[in-house]
Amino acid sequence: MRHSAQTAMLGWPAQQKVVPEENAMSTQQITKGSVVVGVDGSASGDCALRWAVGEAQRTRQPLQVVHALETEPVLTSRQQLGTKATPASSDSVLTAALGLVRTMAPQLPATAHSVTGFAAATLIAASKIAGTIVVGSRGRGALPSALLGSVSQQVAIHSSSVVVVVRENGAQGRPGRVVVGVDGSEASQPALAYGFAYASSTGSSLTAVHTWWWEPLEGVSLGEPWIGDWTQITNQEETLVSELLAGYVQQYPGVSVRSHVVRGDPVVELLEQSKDATLLVVGSRGRGGFMGLLLGSVSRRILKRAKAPVAVVRSAGEAQPAS
Image (tube, rainbow, N blue to C red; front, side, top):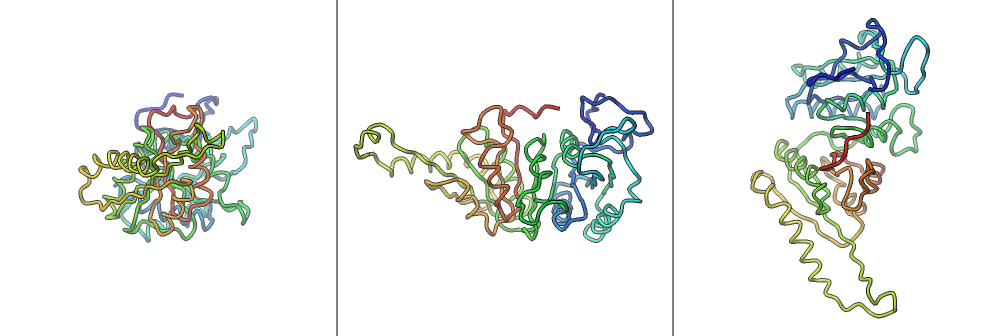
């Protein structure tokens, strides 16, 4: 199946055989750049929906509300995974979701999609054309002790677009503070650009967090004390961050910016700085990430533990996930 330049079929993996037209999702399409949110009737899903409504209003994009009726991949001879649509009007989860959308934003263009298929695969397929995918941190079927559900984790790993994972009771779209992880690499530039654009459009301030963990190697293994200058290294790292921020500060003069540069664990510092943040933005891979790794270790750990909504922005130059 060929994808047009403007739309993509929900949950229709490229390797699957096209099913007959009466079962295909020919009328259930995702608009380029739109905000797509996965709902399942859970409290976490409702939080994601509320965040997605605010994001659609902020970006002036239509909202696509998706409910996958199957959470496990089951194939039969008559129905292929994720290719069959059912009437949204008969889906109680979608009915409730659209009711919430109409209450929050009566004029917002919103389309409901009721899909028979695996939720993660459906949202990953939608990400190929959508601007943003929004999911709750854990769905209705997740264990109470689970900090991150399997669907949100898979979508964050394999999505082609920005993914926002919303924790229950997290800050929801109000002016506040945006925290962005900056590692000094070219790959982290998209996350920084996204963070500044979001802060500017929501009237938020921005905190750029940069950590470094430089260990002297020469001589230390032999038991010799290191006599280097930590102050010099600190100044070098602060200069690096200032240079990275300079262009964005000029582009977004209305955004109040501060940097937090410290020698330490990036996860610890990002979690601490984002406790009261509106949004935490991280790249999908950091400076030390392997080229074949779709989601770096820092991003994975952040997703499991952050209290604020987390936006995972695909890193620059990163190969897109395979279809």
